Length: 332
Image 1 (spheres, one colour):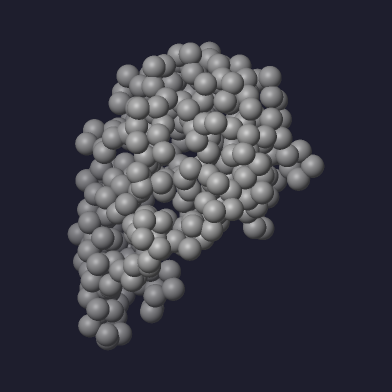
Image 2 (cartoon, rainbow, N blue to C red):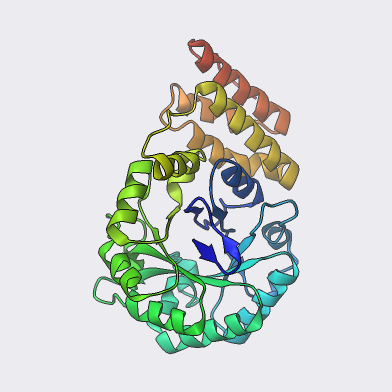
């Protein structure tokens, strides 16, 4: 699969997720087998480009190529300016968000709300594609609501505008993340388009990735929520697609080492206390379903500094590795 000049291999992609797919997580997922990692959504509003949050979101130093940056907004000229600005700051692929179902995004007519205005979609895509000399991709849903499924019409507009690849989440906006993703719409889009199409939604295992690719005929799959606390899912999918076999799950030693390295990267990237605070949600995902996970979270979330967070995490996993019950302190 290619997006412009870039070969995307393996054909499994980390989905953009607000507050999740920051640079530390993207680099980790790339190391563990993702063929492409898309940044969390960045605003097209220039008033916010120089805030601390935006500076972190636009930081691609040392990130494995290609760096894909997702932008969101509603005004074609403003979106074009945002695309140019991000390219000047290291973006090698620009991704346009027309799939986010969040109310605060849709209330501003951005994200998946744009799918209700096909002429505006066309103007935005034309403006952004014409503004930069890097590939532009697009992420959409199947439509705004069950009775407003227009993903195929949007897909045709995208291909006509010069979009280099299209990712489709198999839900309408009103479904949010509930129910079950459907892939028939994605298959119909793939059958009509000549550009790469990426299937997204409920892909949570290597076997599911293979079955979705077979069902849709798509060029790649995109994994979102299933990668939270499970970044090794990318190598599992990659291995299965290449060999038909299944990798064993990571050992507790490896989970501990991956998590500790992830925490250190978050602390280095955001500093304290920001890195400690942001790490808490990742810690919750990594220990979900593990023995005494709730008790561990209650303690580790009290850690006020990076060293305390690392110490409690290391001790907890060392106990699991040793096969003994974790001795959790009352405070970190």
